[in-house]
Length: 424
Image (tube, rainbow, N blue to C red):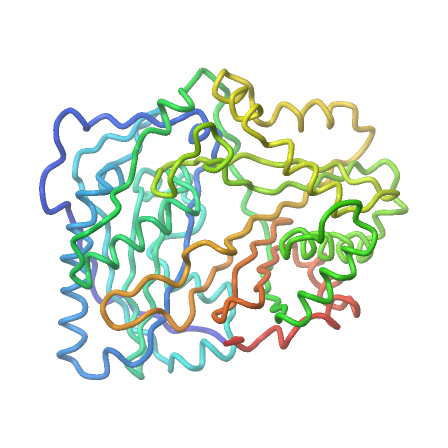
């Protein structure tokens, strides 16, 4: 459904205390450098907490003051990326905090979520290169529905942090809002672990006519897919993400007849958290782009799950050490694709499953849904836990023509639980 969203105010929220001069120049890491300029973004939905005007004012003020306090812990987020994109000027300039009214019931969105429309609940465009927001690292939009439900739309620049960094900020902000004082403060040392270096500017993603659709796989269907792809796997039973990646890849290959296109080199890429793979392991509170890419060059003759798993295993402590010593984490990909005879087709996966996505309690309970948005990146699937934690939502982005074919695949749809309504 189309959303009528009207922004009624915009403020700049600054840290509650000034950043120490010794911390003013925050250096980006090598992995930050290689990350394109776009936002990690989500919307958190809560029911009927703003059903009277006084509640709206109270909750808005609580969020505003707690943001200010959270920015003292996450001081780089209140600064601005410098022109060279190598440093953040931690100048306490502050972050945009918008208030908006949504002319519908929250239940209307939950029963028929449309990814493109959900972007209206965010403070920024998803792709920011060349816009006024290009150097802003964080923005928040407080959306109030006619029924009193709210949606908190949050954008954090991917240039400074990955998905786990995103959740670290949101959950500490929520802890501050509900009055907690025993906080796990973030660690900002990624540049010391992965020192910056002279490399070409990170590629900027093209804005294309992309369609994002949300497919829900319930717990029973996920288990069926795991059994299906575990039958011929040479090792342990596949994880949910391994099995669903293989299944979606197979449906993509079938929909576009890739098996009959021998000159097309196919690659599967998974974003992988490096915190547990570095020696010694890093805590989850470590802030930055602490991830790398597991690259699979799929062979149609071998079990795809085994190939994906092997690409994950290659990102071990030895691999991380090479990254720290200066190896390009895209070197393997470039070496394998340099000899491609024809088209190179890349399909990417990123998983937010098992991350603390539903912990954002600002004092009125946990969200009834945490949603992704239309990320506008071609051939990318984002996995997220359903609200009950058993099933998986797959947010899949393809161009319009490809999505029309993919969305009609009978085997895909046989495993999908009502792809429109929210599965609780």
